[in-house]
Image 1 (cartoon, rainbow, N blue to C red):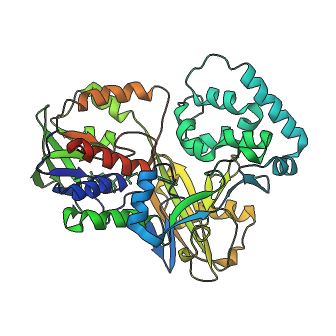
Image 2: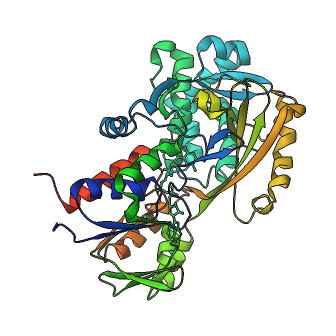
Length: 445
Ligand SMILES: Cc1cc2nc3c(=O)[nH]c(=O)nc-3n(C[C@H](O)[C@H](O)[C@H](O)COP(=O)(O)OP(=O)(O)OC[C@H]3O[C@@H](n4cnc5c(N)ncnc54)[C@H](O)[C@@H]3O)c2cc1C
């Protein structure tokens, strides 16, 4: 493909920033338009009263050696490889995650252990015909006992959809993070089955995950990035994207366009509008919102975990993380914090709660877990994440394919990003997507 004169990048999360980063490296001019007043999207670090916390329990997975190497060069000693395991909270117990056979027997008893092993063996021997649902996938992969205990309620809380309406894809990508398969394998076959990721090893910047977005933006050149620029219309002639409207008033001609905007938004602001059928398909793609409630505490430490998962329905949130356990610099000396993740839909009443009300919603169940005392709370903060995850429901691939077929009609458009491609993907994927897109513009010799 011919080297473009200019790239117009929509959205300044890691996906958009990575395109800018690689474009700058190749000397291809670009302008990035970001709606917010800061870059980083859902990959930022927030600050309050000397406490730092990320927009969700982030870790950089060492899945793509090229990306890890690139980020090591960019961040230098600020990017540390750390080891912090996670746990599942279950009826007052903190179960090692991943489980060791000894820990499983200790916490759940040998009766449960043997039952789970038999269930798993049964589901392997009689796998049945796949129907593509997460329910069936989970039962076949982990057996009934384990799924009933750790997956059924948890997936309802996380996705807001019943597990038989979810695509098995949610397990393939997301649950690799939880990795119950390995957890079960380990429980049954011993510690030799442990994987590096599940052992709790990952990369993490000393002052929070936002340092990755900052470093990408710095190297891309901040003069090429326009914050406070909401794309409100995308003008096209069905073959080419011609221009974008910013903040409802300014119109900018585009060259090549790379969009990381959520797919439903992108199609909605196309001008002229696509067919009602296509709009309907795009608006039918659902995303999950997330509310973070942070508790800043006057005590040194609460847990030894990177993340603690709450798999039953008695606790309304899915997990919390203790930023200090990722890096000591995330809390002032002698203090710590917990950040609770509370997934929801935009139409759920909880999404519109005032910050104080949200803190109330989370405080009692959190105190019930019994990890700290109410009087140790110094302060709190609430952060809302719109469209945190795409919800991969049964049949979403067919909808996507029709939308992509339409969008492929625009010769100068590339899509990137988690919501832009409606895909479960991580920071390292965002960076790889950026590299691949720029390489397409100018292949290596
Ligand atoms: C709770 C949580 C935990 C996570 N944990 C991990 C983890 O452990 N490891 C990992 O690798 N990844 C993790 N991720 C994923 C990671 O944060 C995302 O992959 C990444 O942020 C997606 O990048 P993106 O650029 O596609 O989208 P975003 O970060 O969402 O950025 C999109 C940007 O587009 C902007 N935008 C939207 N509309 C407009 C508009 N109309 N005009 C202009 N700009 C617009 C937004 O303001 C935003 O800045 C997590 C995400 C969440 C939410």
